[in-house]
Picture 1 (spheres, protein in one colour):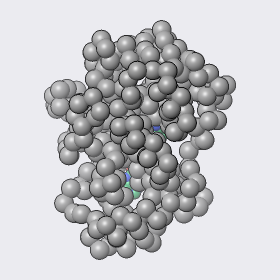
Picture 2 (cartoon, rainbow, N blue to C red; picture 1 turned 180 degrees about the horizontal axis):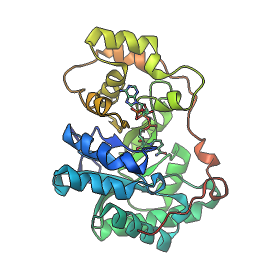
Picture 3 (cartoon, helix red, strand yellow; picture 1 turned 60 degrees about the vertical axis):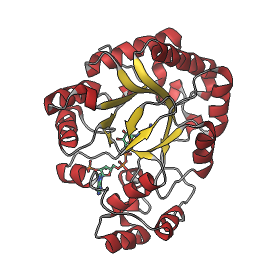
Length: 290
Ligand SMILES: NC(=O)c1ccc[n+]([C@@H]2O[C@H](COP(=O)([O-])OP(=O)(O)OC[C@H]3O[C@@H](n4cnc5c(N)ncnc54)[C@H](OP(=O)(O)O)[C@@H]3O)[C@@H](O)[C@H]2O)c1
């Protein structure tokens, strides 16, 4: 199942994430994902596993042209020249000439000029054909508007935290209004589980009942919910059985009432960092050369 981005590029709606996937198991995870049908891989410079993602793609035997590779520039590499160089670092580690979708990982509100310069570098990479589409991540509506005011290419994608316990209706509405695809990170609410404390989405009774109705798992129901509501989702797993199960979501349909019941679970509480709090002082990381 593909979605068409706002520049006409086709992207698989359901992809495979590798945040917190240790480098030593990344290539096997990516190979397993490609083996069961995923064709979109989401990584990031700050996950420190781009090299192993590239190896996994090559080891899978799936042709490069069939795989949609998405990665992200970390904030420590923002600035026009710095971001152009960061593209070379990511492409070099992935072992590819062209990246399908390149995102700014976070806005840096305290250095917004530098964030805008980084985005202008993405625009230049797009114009030169080094990337097929560009976008952002963790851009809240006000920051998104501020970016659009100063740049010319509307992002194709805004990747944000989005799961049944944090649905960000205002962000989804703002993205849709600009023709930007919302892509859900932590799409199964993994962050409600690995972060610890509180209720995990995987154990939610409402999701559990919907899953039982369809003979599916809570994870499969959450992924189906994203797809039916028009979002892209990028579930992560290092477990081959879960990797396969999380892609086995194309043989059932949730009813309108079931979608609404899941929408109704929103708590308004995010699991990840408040995007406005991300500063180079607190979150700076050195991204190595390729
Ligand atoms: N842009 C950003 O700032 C940002 C932030 C966070 C994440 N992301 C992206 O989004 C992707 C997914 O996010 P995420 O890893 O936070 O959350 P997620 O995909 O919702 O959940 C992953 C967690 O759930 C477990 N899991 C996977 N499948 C399962 C299943 N079927 N049943 C029960 N547990 C299952 C995984 O453990 P096992 O691996 O052991 O299966 C892992 O702990 C990341 O890999 C990354 O690509 C982006």
